[in-house]
Image (tube, rainbow, N blue to C red; front, side):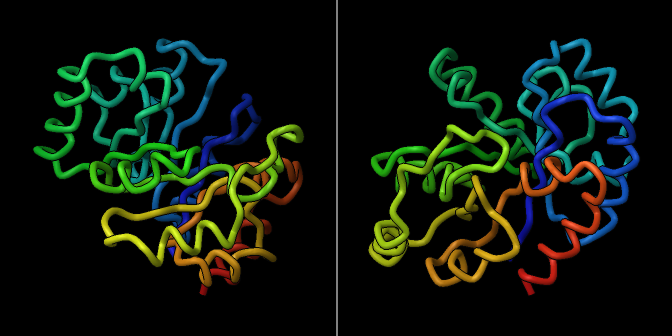
Length: 205
């Protein structure tokens, strides 16, 4: 299974170096997620990243997407709701021309199939009760997800996000997910995020 790492939401000492080390391992993509940073701060953060990290980076900031050689663009739900279809299409066309990927998050059953037609990666979230947000409980039933996968024409790649850890990956494989996204499992462990990642990589094999 493919692995997508979400960056630490808060500022963390040594994160730049950690992201570089993780990019060197079995991480397929890294999503830049810094909800408390403005655009200028995000640019300053991105300027510190190694080329190895940038090559796997998926961003949701237009300025970063335009200025840096990154892997792709992630459409936040708020961006989709607030932007014109013309703007959305422009980003999709630019990504296609650059051979970059586009991703989106899916929180409702009604959006499941629709999103998979238009995006390279669909993050289905939260599949399990989340680690990073204690109150963010899943609305999905695993049996329902399995039926959705079995009753659809396969397009796009579906990644499980929310509460994923090294002990429940086998359930994701059984359901039919192509990969997984990780956030809390890595960053809530203050001392050994690389050790956490290694556990996850082994469970994915």
